[in-house]
Length: 300
Image (tube, rainbow, N blue to C red; front, side, top):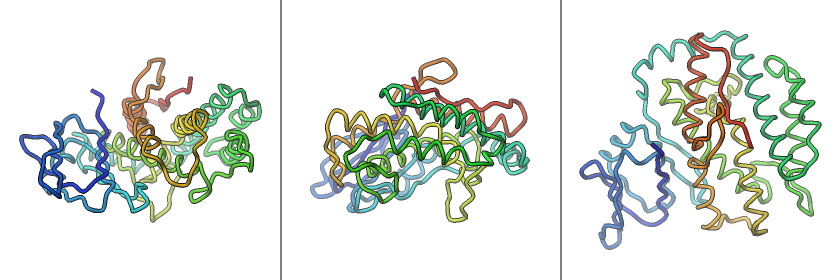
């Protein structure tokens, strides 16, 4: 079942009744709408005057729905996820924690190869020269010891957005960085939710190890998914060259569709959120030794 992304952008009181989310206008107490909890994959809170009841939080987490909070620039800054998303979670945790360094290096090698391959295909559909990315992909070693990812990314970002003044990919950089940041935040929540659903700890990464980052594993596994966001942003700019610093409502609505966008994974077309579940499930099975290959989506 495809879960819905609900974004609350005005003063509201959010509560639950009959296992439904009730959205109430906090200024006049009128009911704006309601939706079954089981249909919600992601609830995004994007206004400072939102009040949410504790029973609703509990019910959403019980349903493995991700709750995402945003700052006053409307950018996602935090996320709530459940702690018991899988019936054999303790077994999965143990396998993840005890994963050997060679296994983690092999998984990272697969991840970076999949990312560079998808970057290459994004460049191809826009008619951009991509042979160098194939060279980078072929040279990715176990653990990406000579950092082919960085070499590929440098080449990729210098060419993907053909802006007059050039483009530099930075978290706080000039547009369209803000669109990429917003899209990646949505993508990160999708991956983190899928990881907890597969009984994995999103904190323990196979490559990312920043002690201040609670989502290191999500940041690892989302790498091959990033080009899907990149292409969506490029399409948005292609159809409208509006690249102001503030994200417009239409741009935001477009990026909120990322969890439901179709991707091809293991030869089949699925919504991205379903693909993320397949990837996280394959990662869990790699940790337990059942399989050796991660399943990632292919950009087509």
